[in-house]
Length: 244
Image 1 (cartoon, one colour):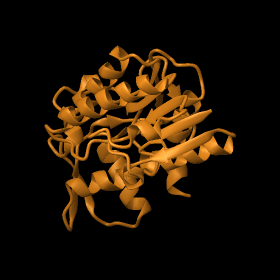
Image 2 (image 1 turned 90 degrees about the horizontal axis):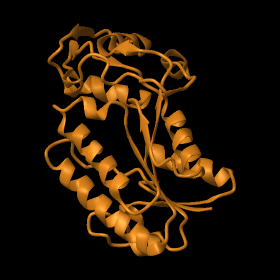
Image 3 (image 1 turned 90 degrees about the vertical axis):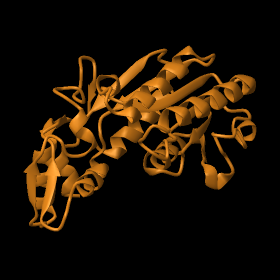
Image 4 (image 1 turned 135 degrees about the vertical axis):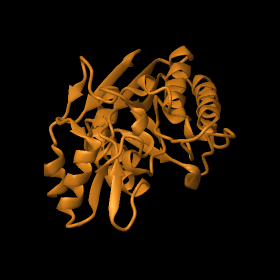
């Protein structure tokens, strides 16, 4: 199949392209650097020419109040162009539990993106995943200083980006789900606990202070971000990933 991977040069997209091409498909990465602008629609018609599946891995440039407008405009443009091009399957990547964290505008923007896809004219699949191992380092930086890292005890169930990419690739070459399939890592951590584990593995002597007001993930309560019934549980543990 010919598959357009929008956002195909990023952490997940580049791996999705590699997986699909290794399996014999024609996966083509698209991004602003290749001339595609989802906000204006420039380059969309060319990107979707003779394409059977489009995978949308683009992300809002900000996590703030501008994110809903970004996802609305980009999804409206993508679905209109996909319908014109005769695309038979549209896939988006989203977040496990996004609808359970109403305090986070970005998470609600991702729910909006899902809803636009579901209401659109193209057979679809939504792939929901938990937080990536690869982003833990960035999360620690949000609330850190020279001596301490403040983190909430929010429960998360992170997974490896390689397994995210494999999940997206697998769904992309299957029949449209006309629904959602969720994936999560094999272990549940408090984010503060995960911070201590990460710093210890890196030989970082800073102290992790449990602070349930610190950072974006403080808005997620209880088991909001944890795998629900029917979630596919992946194999790679965080300690295994750290040791690589």
